[in-house]
Length: 132
Image 1 (tube, rainbow, N blue to C red):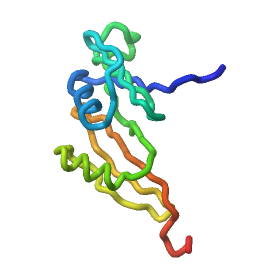
Image 2 (image 1 turned 120 degrees about the vertical axis):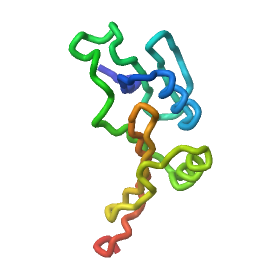
Image 3 (image 1 turned 135 degrees about the vertical axis):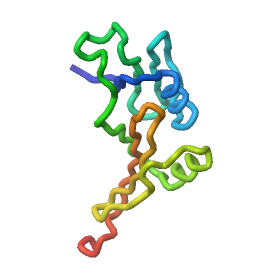
């Protein structure tokens, strides 16, 4: 099998709120939408997102009442300091401020209106004394 795309499907209470968040602040574009559904994508390597309303009948019965939780949608790229500043200026709450780990991971997080955590990651040369 050859994989041609990657998509994460998130079950949320308010599809429209998440759709607005991802399109207004994170550069996603709506590809398709219907009642209780939205398909979002970007023009780069970011994973596509499908938003499904919790309780929708297209989901198997044992999955209908689940809610997107316990996951982090991580987007890896460059220039995340400027991205954090841009999001702050747009009024997006930064739920984990920008920080750098000793192993070279720079990251910060935002959370969409349905509680979906989006983490921005940039890899840099480690700065800890064990790496000099």
